Image (cartoon, rainbow, N blue to C red; front, top):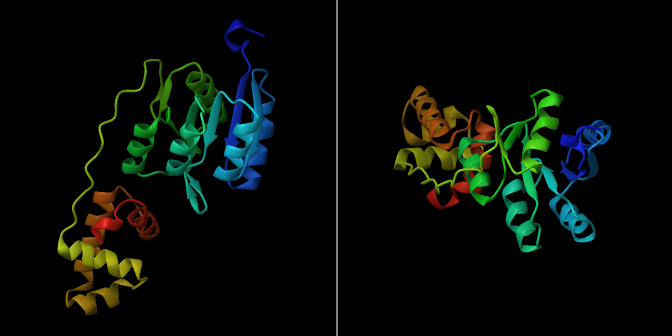
Length: 213
């Protein structure tokens, strides 16, 4: 075993998709310097962390009814001093900044190759940070709190109708505007919130912009 990989990295994988979690745990456990435990929820993760010491938590952003942003402060309050790497299929730019500001050591996309994941684990465990562009050995920069976008009245009305589940045609009728105008307003909301789909917009609106609706 090389000197670089001589220290065992005690790792906790938190992901609510059982097939992905169990498969990934088996693959990572084959690495000589990784010791892997896994669970499906924040509650289970905190319970395991109370019983065992971990150097690193691999944390999915979307845990069904839970989000990674709820784990980070809870873990610190429980006395966890290790590192956290977000491993996710998708996260908005706004939420990524929020997670980094809470103390996450990087964002790893699930579509990346397996060898990049093992590299990111070792990099983060060693004190570095990981971004979409690869490793950085320096400490993460201080992330300034981002100002939430202020929606105008028309955007707020469209957003409220979207949250009610109304289709574009119904929204257009209620607001007495064209359906194409509704689509344009939706695109502006996508841009402001950093999302790509209607479903993501609903989720982010409830998570981050409830005070603006």
